[in-house]
Length: 180
Image 1 (cartoon, helix red, strand yellow):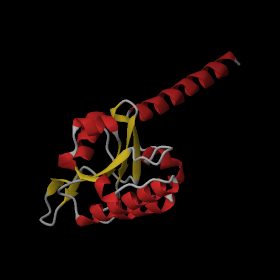
Image 2 (image 1 turned 90 degrees about the horizontal axis):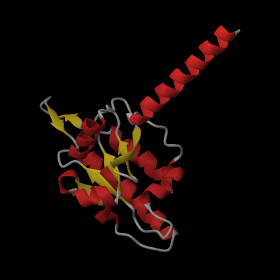
Image 3 (image 1 turned 180 degrees about the vertical axis):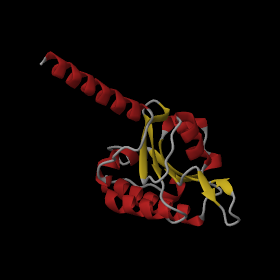
């Protein structure tokens, strides 16, 4: 009997350790429903507390996905009686400053790399690549990833990715539709 209890306790410790390891590595995390994420994007007064970042080398479809998220953020702000300019929320990866990383939650559209039309690997979103390198994580086959305290304490990141050129756009559209 004691042997069975000890084995059960060891299994429980291993399960808890594996879960903690996965969370520390910021592996793919279930986001819940997009409506649960409203507080990621706008505060209780309707002020935007997130920015949307697309890669300067990304396909135009990533910008389309970012625009859908920005429009949903505008709607969330309007529901709280304020207005925000959705175009001001979308920023190229090369324009993001350290101050922005410390001030805002960030939604990254697109994975770190992309195969271009010549069959060569290019950086799709430098901020996504920086975060993946910094946290030692991969996002192959993912839809969304939520990274807690990504660049600064209390400032999180959602990475929206998907298969091929259309994947991030399609997943951003689903996220935007679910937010409102």
